[in-house]
Length: 427
Image (cartoon, rainbow, N blue to C red; front, side, top):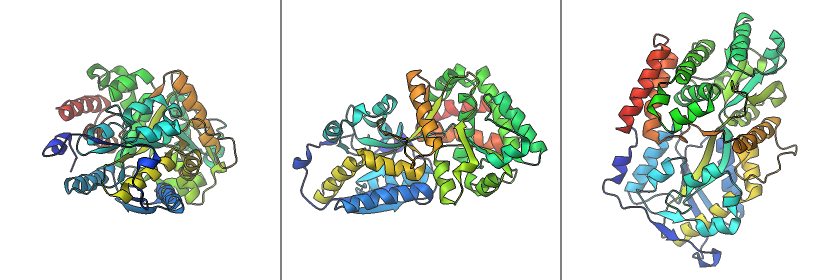
């Protein structure tokens, strides 16, 4: 069941915030944090467990209740707890959903803690408004991923004589065709909902940055039916024809063993795939990590940021736990450890990624992020609930999933159906 805003507002109080102060004003109690997220396994599970251990080392109690699956499942659990009057001290939440959900239950005013840490000056400006929707910090970003990362199997490249990554979609398509002719499955992506949705944002951002911004972030009707969108759907059809035909409903990670061996050629995925590859025992030296093709020849960065929202609780131990968790999340060393586990980039822009604990992929992504910020070519991910609220995102991905797995739907029909889905979801 989709979680819709009108359901939240029925019978709930408006947003509120407790006026947090400096550490001395918080109740003195053994800090305890109750936390809900979908991070249950893999590198994300390892990273959040590491954060919990750090909180315990600082004298706190960490009580994580993971809800595996798609974001909607986690949101359903969160909604039920809020309605029951028992929200967690903090929960996973990001993008526009932070503003939507802040209207259903009181949140914690984190302004004093953020100001004390100087955090607002240390993170990308595009993220600030998302985390202080009513003018106060109520959520904190923890890590940043680029969804437009290209992973290339070096063994597969060697088989076809490829020496560099494709710079344009035409070059990508030519290389994919060469790989297929050599018996290599060109694209190692999976076939689940967010993966299908991400394939479109990858294609469109690599065609035209401003067309992406207008169509997927602003939902401009003309942009949704533009020539660039039609071109993106045509490229999406190529992706669909180059994946394993048996991949429907499967996670991309099932393909990684074949990818590392060179039986599959290219994976278009977020930086988190680095953490998954390492957890599987893979060697990142066997993978070329760079940006997906960009026809405009300029850096573009489609951003996905993981964040936590803090819910108001009256218990002294929970409020103390919120203070401790917020302070830890903003610390440089905590962000370094978290990102080194997951393959992300720290939200703090003052982290030095030159050391051996960081990968070339992370360094390359960080460089592209800085360049994209300067040229105003940072975009927000649709598939990962950064560009739109969950109901609109879900409606759009319904269309994209059907399109990817049904080759009888033409690109023209796909464009029309996506625009119609947006109209319906916006109601």
